[in-house]
Length: 372
Image 1 (spheres, rainbow, N blue to C red):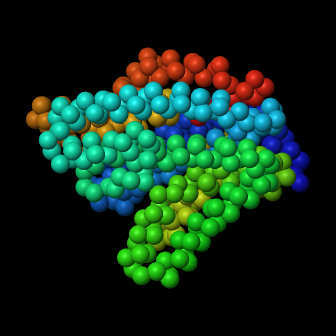
Image 2 (image 1 turned 120 degrees about the vertical axis):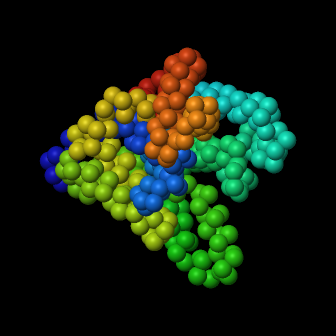
Image 3 (image 1 turned 180 degrees about the vertical axis):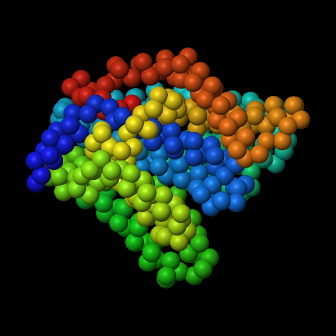
């Protein structure tokens, strides 16, 4: 074992806030905004990968939530599920349901008689219960469809913490999470070979509803929590400052080959990128990811995600009123600017009221690793 690895592990465990995660969140949400404003209208293949911003966010979430839970268990001897769910509710529900109600009002006023308006109200029960990823198909224009990823996140929060608590040890948790990831990855490669074409398509569609990147992030967190496994992976993920850049390049290659590689490869690559960026704070990407504007965008990324489609419509209305035609780049910039103003205002004057309440439900002996 290198003499550097115990010190690196000690620093990792002592880190109360991973400085790169807001920067990665910023990349994630900006990629999604690009996908919904101009990504499909450009000829360059690189311009069409914005939807994988959600994949990156899944990897961040799986890694961070599991790290929080493991550290709480170490310091407190247990995981307080009630406090966990109260904290998650205070972070997620106020803005989500406020935006959903805003959509209800706008759709009722503007589109209640249109097919997409009627479809929205038909799907409202799924949006309200975080089950849209299971029951709302994307068929043309589907209002509020982007909430599918938030539904998948909520299901992860509902299922994984009690399972991790019940498993009791990191080793058992790692075995279960790694087993699920391996099963999903192999099922994509093996099972379609034994299915008819239509059944294979349906199987692939169902499989892709499972956020594998979350599970890959879970596995990464479980591996790095233990000093011995941290030391084994250190040379591969963070042995030098340049490893984060290497894993960013690997993820970029996987994006470029999207559709040619198995679905699981990109998800795992993004989880490894997140792990590499969190194992050491002095990696090559750290300065860029910690730039104040980038970190700010990451800190309000939840609001940006929920408000970006409304912001896009506002940008289009303003352009129409001024007789302007916005190209993909201009629409992306206008949407992003409006969304940043709206999300920033929401965070400062609305969400922060609920976030302040979370302190009452923090584990008494646990250090907060990162606002999740």
